[in-house]
Image (cartoon, rainbow, N blue to C red):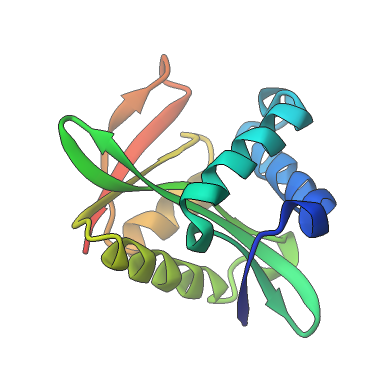
Length: 154
C-alpha cells in the first residue's frame, strides 16, 4: 500500500467518486454530498493547510482508498479529526482499514494532538464496529441524530 498526497488536478475524478460513495455507504444515497465544486474548493483549502492529511491509497497501480485528516478545535482543545476513511468496496473487511488507521494515528501524532474524533452514520454498523475495534468510543449523537461522534486517544 502506498500513500499519495492528493493533487486535485490529477485526482479530481477519483476523489469525487470516492467521496460520493462514502455518502452512499453511510446514508443510503448521495444527496448529502452537495455540490461537487464546493467539495473540491473545500478540499483545495484543506490540502493547502494539511497536505499530508489528504491522501489517496494506492495498491498494485490502483487507487483503493482515501483519507481526509485535519486538526481542529473542539471544546477548547486541538484534536485530530477524521473527515473521511474510505476504501473501495472490494477492499473492505480485508485489514486495509487498520493500515489507514495507522497512517491517521501517525499524522495526528506528528500534529501533536492526543485525541482524535470522527462522525459516523448510526446505520453504518460495519464502520462503528471497526472504530470500536480500533479503540474509539462513542461520545454521542449530533446533527439531530444523523451522526454519532466518536473519539479515540493516541
